[in-house]
Length: 218
Image 1: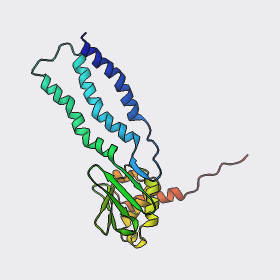
Image 2: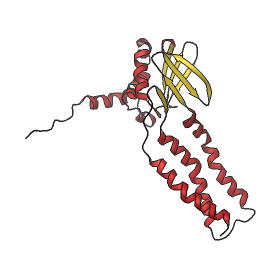
Image 3: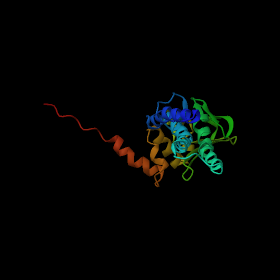
Image 4: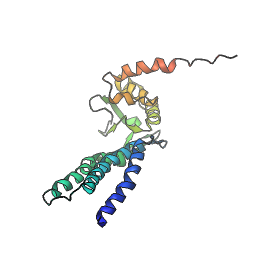
């Protein structure tokens, strides 16, 4: 066995268990005043970029015959394809990090310039059902897109509901329902449910309001 095969085998043996452990790990807690993707999603995106190339390398390493010269370009393309496809996802989950306080919201994304939105300047709020994000727009034209996949949404939604003008929220009942769902840590169904946010909120509120059964005493 040559040196390159030994190195490849050792890397696969070390990295694959670590990556798989990271993919199945629980989602980490968020920092107060900050919105970012969870550790689970960051590890999942890394796994999507690295596990398939490692598996292809393992197949090539342990096959009975060496690659022919005409097969090498195709294998190299296949190994590089997965990191290339996953690169936008990696940028999104690692570079998006928003922060908020009682005055406003700082929006940081690799896809647009950094901007500051003040709660007092919010001109409209809208839930984009097909894109699955919440749009918050100021009178100056600045827009922030808030994904239900972000961590820390409960604290963000609580501040937004308190600071955005009530009449603005009343004009956008779906968006207000989205913030209420985020505040209650119940935004997950927004990603795959065909019903409106108001209907989702109506489904969970009776359940949250129902008192838990009391334990009978002897």
